[in-house]
Each structure stands twice: as C-alpha cells, then as structure tokens.
Amino acid sequence: MAPAHPADSWKTPVVWLMIAQAAMQLSFAAWMAMYNNFGVEIIGATGRDIGWQQSIREIPGLLAFTAVLWLMVVREQNLALIALFLQGFAIAATGYVPTLWGFYLTTLIMSFGFHYYETMNQSLALQWLDKRTAPVDLGRIVSVGAMAQLAAYGGVILAFSVLTISYQTAFLIAGLFTMGATIVLALLLPRYVEAVPQTKTLVMRRRYWLYYALTMLQGARRQVFVVFASFMLVSIFKFTVADIAFLFLINCCVNMVLAPRLGWLIARYGERWSLTGENVLLVVVFLGYALCASTGDTSLRWLAAILFCVDGISVTLGIAIKTYFQKIGAPEDMASQAGVAFSINHIMAVLIPVILGSVWMIAPPAVFIIGAAFACVSITLARLVPARPMPGGETVFSPQPSPAE
Image (tube, rainbow, N blue to C red; front, side, top):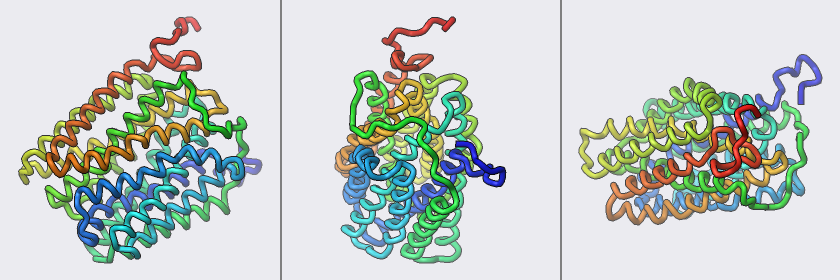
C-alpha cells in the first residue's frame, strides 16, 4: 500500500483515515451541538421526544451488520465514501423539515450514513494499521477528528453568538462541508488493496464473547452521556446552543492534545487497565450528574459542565476495545465482526433512550445512577481482559502464554 511515486507520499491509508474521520466529525459534531436546542426551541420537543429521536438514531446502528452484505457488490472503501456522503446530505437537509417527524426522518438517514461509515472505518483501520502501533495511530486519528470537531463547534459558536444565522443555514453549511470532503477523498486519494480478503457472511464466534459484552455495555453507558447529559444541561440548567458548542469545543482541544498520549498509554499498559480506568472515571462522572440533576441548583451549573467535559474526554480510552479485538481477532474477520459489534453495541443503544426517557420524566437523577451501574459492570468485564490478548488467549480464563514466549 506504499505510494508508487514520491509526489504521492502523503497518499497513505493513514492519511485517508484521518481525512475521512475529519469529514465525518465536522458535520456530526455540528449536529450534536445543535440538535437538542433545535428540538427544544424550534420543534418544542420534550424529554420523551428526544428519547425517541435518539432511539431512532440508533436503529441503523442495530442494523450495522447489514453493511457486510453490501460488500458483496461494493468495496469497503467505496462503501465508506457513500455512507459519508449520505451523512452529510441528511444533516444539510435537517433544517428544511422543522417538524418532529421530519426531525426523526433526517436523523434516521443521517444515522444510516454515520453507522455504515463507522463500521467500514473500523474494519479498514484494523486491517491497515500495524498491531504494534495501532493504539498510537488510532489516537492520532482521534486527534485529527477532534480538530474537525473544534472547527465545527467554533463555527456553531460564531454562527449563533455573532452572526445569528438560522438553524437551517447552520445545518446546511455543516452538511455541505462533509459532502465536499467526501468528494475530495474520492477524487484525490487512491483505492487501497485489501491485505486479507474479508468474510462476507455474518458470523458470531464464541471466543469473541468478552469483546461482544464490552461493546454492548459501552453502547449502554454512552447513551447516558450522548442523550441525557446534554439534555440535562439544556433543560435543567438552560445552556444555550453556543454554551453546548463551547463545552464540546473544550473537549476537542483537550482530545487533540491527549488522544495520541492516551493511545500511547494503551499501548504501554494494555487494554485491561485502560478499560478499567475509563469506567472508574465514568462511575464518578455519572454519580456527579445524579447530584446535579437531583437539586437543579444553578450553583451546580458549572460542576455539571465540568463533568460533561471529563465525560467527553473519557471516550478516547474506548479505542482500547478496538485494539483488544485487533489482537484477538482473525485478520479475515475484521469487516464482519465490525458489523456484528456495531449491531450488538446498538441493541442497548436503541432501548436505553426510550426506557430512560420515561425514567427521566419521573426522576432525572435515576438515569445517571443507572449509567453508573452500567459502568460498574464494565469494570468487572474489563478485569477479564488478559494482559497479553491474542488468538486463543481472549480472556483471563484462556491459557496464557509464558513470559518466555
């Protein structure tokens, strides 16, 4: 996969992954910063409506395994580009259908693009990146994505604090940027040869059970952050769209600096300690959210904001699940298992927003206490990851190699 000509030395798979990640994050970050305020201010959505909207957003994630079926007729890299373009198109159209059902429809289309792209992106990354340097490379890719998020959040703040443009225009600009970046990827960078032909059928393998369990719990607890933490800031503490964008912007700045270093820590200390640390941190954050939501005291406004930023930073440590699978998985399973994992991740992601949306209407703090419980279960599972994961050594219960090996 090395470039054939010195002038094309920048046209590497890692650069492709970086540009694609930036293109995805650009519009998705802007959408994330605006959707709660758009729903509340323009559509008049309630907590239950937002819960349904987020469950609808996760349906394509539940169906992510179907991406593998498209590989019978479309190459992985091409499918990733099509999905990326679809995401940008749906986000660009969001402001033009300012009704609850229109919001649901554009969310669904956007999500199909997002989840198909993410499935292919994970598969391509695990195939293209060297196992020895994958955590660091993934950290760098996350850092580039954070730069794109920084641009998106800065643009949202500028748009609503200085230029006072409409939601319609803001969604349109964000979507067009991603569509344009996708076209650049398609025209300027080459198609890379698959190192190992990928399995085109859907198979769940017993030896991957811990990877599946970690992935499912990750989907459950992340919904608490994605859906209800930001909704708490908007509905209880009255954060504006510019305020939310500013918090996301802080996350981006920190992730740009920390992501490569966190990748190095995962490579140095292993997936077991990384996943344990991530979930211990999340327990503290979720209990802090519960405290803030239980009182609604405006003096806790900035505590809630700080917890939100810490929560966002912890996402980077989640790449340890990907590198864990890269070490235990067969090379030909990268594409099929990426689809299976996304679907498993979204079993909980589809159910959690609707169920916890109803819980929110009764007792908002209970939502975050449940999130802390999910993180506690993840800590237990993380301790089952062996110090040296490998095929045949997927868990601490598997035969472990001797230090001499």
